[in-house]
Image (tube, rainbow, N blue to C red; front, side):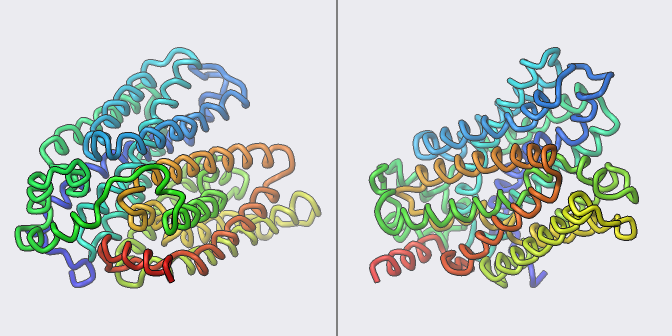
Length: 453
């Protein structure tokens, strides 16, 4: 328990709020993992909604375009209606999207359902990391921030399992029931003290601080927090250090998404079928998610002890090496015509080593790092822009993977992703700050001092 450092009584409401948020990210994971078991069905002769390969690719990626809209709305609503209310709204839209998917009888309805689900994703990933960062103690902020990714992965694995045995309708109905948990739990929990201070409601801010961190912590923190939380406008975003922070996060997000993880997730069963005859596609996918969940959990437990930056450097180096070796294998097999029958399991091994490396930090840290380093007066705008670019990068990476895999072979996307991931490594080494065990106010003081130096 020394590793976890969990005083349960003091942080009970923090954990309850994070659990409610985790149900939202679990639901998001379900909708991202949905395409892996159901895409082969939709392309088969027994498809309940017949479609072409091109149409099916839009079923896969249209949620990312919805995510872009959701990210923009997150930036608008973050300081307008609050973090908590935005999460509650996303719960309702998740329910709507799952019900539409359950009863979809045409391609248009299915696409609309996936678009709304993507909107919900964009909303929660723009709001939840900020909410968690603002209600969490510095010593566990990294760990609690990592739960967003871990529960997303559990949701994806869950969908791959039930999607193997249940129809589209029944799996969607099960998933439609999950967001109700968020509504029941979160409606009784206060918004973050930062939001109340933005609204100039010091009394509610103090009540929120007492609820999340105790009376002693509230008395010590409220005055410091009130000085650091200010209203801003879009012009503030283009001043130092805000612009530098935004460019850092956007560069990191580019390297993260163009490491290929979103494409590998969408097309996981296809990849394992291409890579090896030793595993069934479903077995390979379940191993894929099990490894992600295990090593993401390990990374989460150490992110507040070792630090964000060292973990991300090691994680990215491992990802680059794995992608490079995988690309060279497919180049040798598909282009050079070399006999690779003796090492046919190598792509599967490389995918597993890649996801071990990626999951340990590169998958975890970028999502909540922006919530840590963005100042309160530009946080809403910064989150909207960085998350919007995240969904654009994810959509481009997925379409690029599908196109190059079909037109040229797997070696092209693997080698391209290795190059892009190397760019992310440079960003981490030279530009990304360490935020371990620092309060949000301390991080801002440090960033401002560096900017003025």
